[in-house]
Length: 152
Image (cartoon, rainbow, N blue to C red; front, side):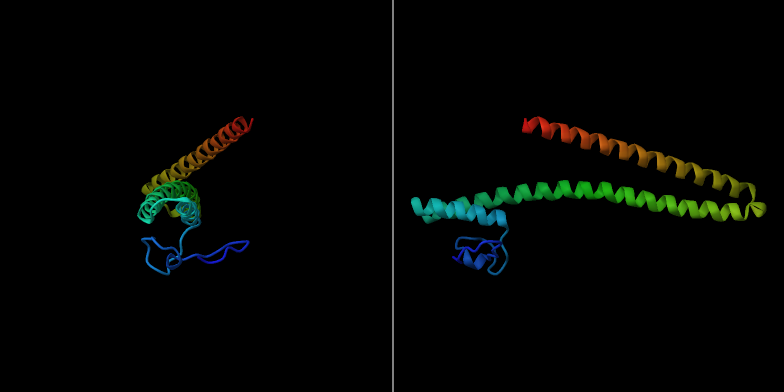
């Protein structure tokens, strides 16, 4: 086992016996903590096979927790992506509206109907973005209140 040094320590599967990962792959910090706890228990008593199975079970729960964390972060990223995409749509629609207004004298009746639809689309999209921003602010306020209640 490598010596522990203050700060971060990069440990690979080659340094941890009983690991099911291929040698040379980095082990996450959570897996390292699990391995350390199980290693300490193994010194106090218990068979090595029992310790290895405990490490595998703990690593599985760590993987599940990490998968949930990734899922939540992906959902948050999608929300941010939606806002960016909507802003891009609004900008493109503004450009289309501006071009149509520049050639208003030569527009047909169908072109004017298209212009009205573009303006309605832009207006609805802006309303959705404002509503979504209000929802996110309300959720943030609720989360802050819950955190304060937990601390008290």
